View (cartoon, rainbow, N blue to C red):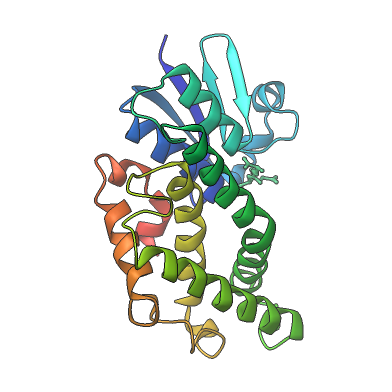
Length: 221
Ligand SMILES: N[C@@H](CCC(=O)N[C@@H](CS)C(=O)NCC(=O)O)C(=O)O
């Protein structure tokens, strides 16, 4: 029975799972849900994930939600090629970088993206300036890592890349909006201010199957 994945366009969490499935070359049935129609809150979806969020993965009778848990499951169930490294040390570093991202970076990415896309939020507010400041600092740290290696951890594409990439893309998309011009002046263009980060974005985008993972509605606007 093929793996089924339930996802929504533009969800950075769902994007991680699609990148992982493509990396492992696993066949899957894709269920693209429409957030605008609340399809992720249907009785069928709530039966799979009572939180009514995506991504959700169904593999035979087994159901998993929470994107990082799905990546972990896939790596244990389908170990080749590996996403969490080949040694305990690599696995530890990959998980550490993911935990650091989730604890110290992701909340600020979410804050900026929500503020830009909500149209009404004041982008000059102190908490937005502060979030941007933190993201600039964190981006410099990642830039430092990527100026020494091709991938976020070591010399192989890993779960760390799959977790961070959609968040960086979301931030970039938000900061490219005309209304974010002033806010993003010291950050953008990312490829100029953070060249190693820019090359890494292109490297991930060159992975086989990447086009299938790209948020469909991002192509339209
Ligand atoms: N921690 C979860 C976050 C999942 C999540 O928040 N998904 C969003 C889409 S980006 C969602 O389904 N939101 C719908 C809602 O909250 O109603 C994960 O990593 O999978």
